[in-house]
Image (cartoon, rainbow over the protein chains, first blue to last red):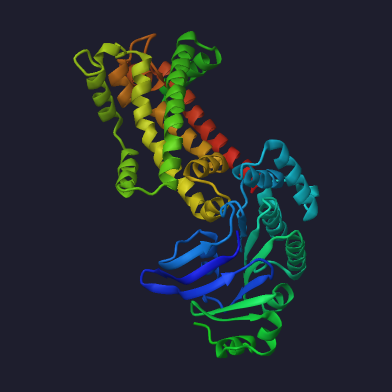
Length: 234
Length: 234
């Protein structure tokens, strides 16, 4: 399905430009981190890539073969849990993906085991802790076996312990062969989890750099001031 | 005062003595109103869900009309149904005027807007929360509507019970299309109106006490279901 090609993509709401002529090609392999300050347009860009929003202008094209809808999944900053058990939440996603009932049960059990939620599989998802709910959201997405997994600030609302666990799960998902594309404004997390950085500021793609280079020698003034914590908040 | 006390005593004796006439009226009331609420739910809940998740031309106008219809005057509904079902009316051939079936039709028309409009509101509120997640998992409008109907089921129970309360307590429509025929179409509200005008206070009071108890029990049940569900499922 990859590469994902963004060609001069813009997105506006009520005349306000949120994404401004972004062009990029996201290929298989390196973990891509979309980094930028609050309001830079990271989450909107991710929703455009995932197909939840339609560009005002420009094109987003999956160049590879395969079912683009089925081969991608997304985990949101605030996970939305259905009013059913943790297990049933995973099964729900698999049912929509057209997986057979027997296979659903097997996969749901396996993935909950892998993220450490097997012991709460039967509990209502909405009464789980915030960290558990985010792990469950990761499990629900992972169970689909996506080629690309979009993660929109997946640890923004979590404490350090839960953050560490979610980051471990991201590592597991990556190890299983899934391409990771995530947004964050957490520099430490970008360093830990990223191979390449797409730095956004004011809706523009300011630079795209390997992670080591980004933190030692950023190519743009905006990235440099952001890393030093001096970028003014708009 | 003593007259009221005597009437209350006589009413109590009828209730606890399971007076056949009183039981007959109560059972017919329940049969008519429960049938009406079942039909209104089968139509109104999916209609509310469909309006919540779909966007189409005229949707806002339809919502305004539906909300306005919640305040339909029962006597007007009774009059319209009477005209439709009377021998000269377009549905006169059905021959159901002055039967419980006509009362079911009138009550269904009365409570259908309540069930549809309130369920639309409840489901649309949830849709705001669920929309991105469901679309991300590949749910179309139909699947989303079914999912939301299930996930909001405890709030919808309250709406259905409110519809039943409205049906069981109204008098204007059923007295016009039912005719208040003893043993055939006499329900609690019409019997109360008649017996009060005749001065037969014990039966009127007995029915009034049962009607009030029913409404109270329904509200208690609705409250309990919602509270218990919230604790159990979050």
